[in-house]
Image (cartoon, rainbow, N blue to C red; front, side, top):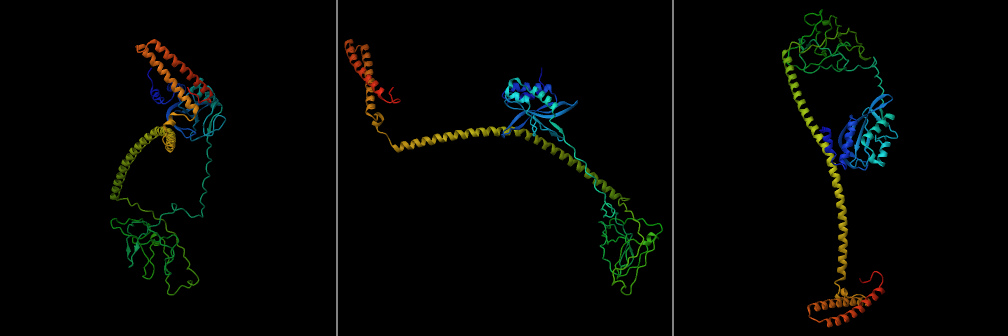
Length: 471
């Protein structure tokens, strides 16, 4: 039967293990028994700081709790000396879960089941699929996770009171003037401004200025852009064809605003003083009431202007094409960066394993170097001691330090000499250089002498202290 892609991948990644065939058989049986689990390789950091590339079965295992089915996310790490050591089991909660600590689950998510304790005592009778079944049974009785409580909804913001200051977005747009008056008093057409018109600051009018109504808005003279014609503003149906403006005085401050008569309301007569007003010493002059002017809608500057519409469409098409090309380039860059990130993540465990191996080799080299350094130091000390003593005499090398030892050395030398003499006499007898009678007479004399010397050697050795005898 041909192997699947998962089995081929698994067979390649179990090679670093001590028992690869057992690891392959256990993981394959577990994946067949629990198809919801998935294999992967990842770096695991032990409690002592060591990092190792291990096989891991991750995903969910189904359980049944109070008649309902649930999926518990787990991660099962297979150590390198499997099955001598039990697997390392963790509960991995998702973002909407929390770990429920108990007698078999720690706060960090690590599990210590009773089956794992039995595994440590008798590993040859345990298997990975049986461990997952024990987890399934234990989690069905006591689920290791629970749903994270949801945060209560925030109360709505209090409504803004009617007396508070309205926001900028709720304010009506400023009114546009219908015309402006030059210094000579002739009406001038209002040119299209290049920037929004600002109302004048309060308190800038002179004492001779006619009092302004509360709802009127003043405008400063805008900049002129001659390339566009002035927009047509709507007029009141009761207004005359030409706007009626009050006469301007060179000594008075000209106020640019809406003419109340153009909207069908008679304007108040401007006061003319020949002497200082009687109330100037007592306070500001009283403000007469004027009916508020209706708001004039803002014109659409793109109506009837094909040039602006054409430019707008061209700019829109250009921006759309540029944004599309930029988005495509950013997508390609993001894909390339993701590929580089995956390559770096895959190479990190191998680099860490190589660093751990090199650190172990470094420690061994340090130990060997320290032992070698101590041996060299001891040899140098011995050589310096010998140089300090100087060269020994010949008699000191051959002779002993006591009379008994010198006698023993002489007896041993004579014994060996007699033995060599008897040997050469035997060779001379065999070669016919001496006769038998002479050989026997010489050998008997030498043997008696050798016997006496050996007896004396044994007597001297018996009198010497233990460990100093001659052999």
